[in-house]
Length: 277
Image (tube, rainbow, N blue to C red; front, side, top):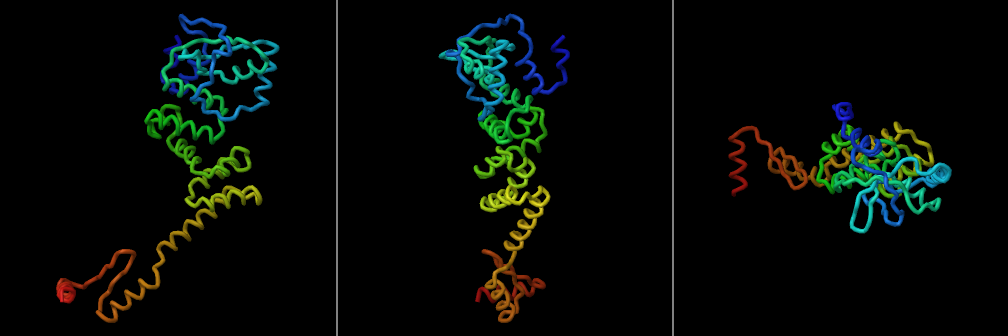
């Protein structure tokens, strides 16, 4: 029995199974005019590979649409839930209708199915995946952990993917064009300085730097920045020296803060009396 078989499986598996499985009880395959169907606004894919669409179009031209698309009824017609590539390929070969199954999904289910279907087939680029995660978390008010549980991924995986959105647009483009690897991009996404991210990304492309080399450069920079932040300005050191020489006080001066160390309560009392005049 299908439900028993599905017990214990993640939502990702169940959603995908529901999308591509055989017709469910009470459903029919209908021939729906293509002009009445619109793409899914929740579709996480931004780029459809023309070569793959052409291959699919050729197959449809020779054999027809083997598998019906999944659609839902909307105000002015139908919206694609699953099967946008088949829809595009069918239009490309000049079909006027396409076999479809109409299902009543709410917006959240549509968004989940659209994401899961693409993830199952490993069709999304890393940036598309990150944008899809961000969109679903925002629209459904989900935490990273909740999303990770929904799609059957670890929280750290979701965090790393979302981090790619911190990259400048041109560096995201390098990742999309496969000029830098996902591992490179993860390291770069953890840096705060946009100019530095771009510089290192260009070095990866031009010099072929490895992930390990980028990690070392990033760690060296982080250490240097920390030392720079912790370095005490000369004026602060002068204030400390003046307090020691002129007032006999052991003091530490940092940004917006003066700390005076005393040996005991008696010395503290003398200091307070001196400050109060």
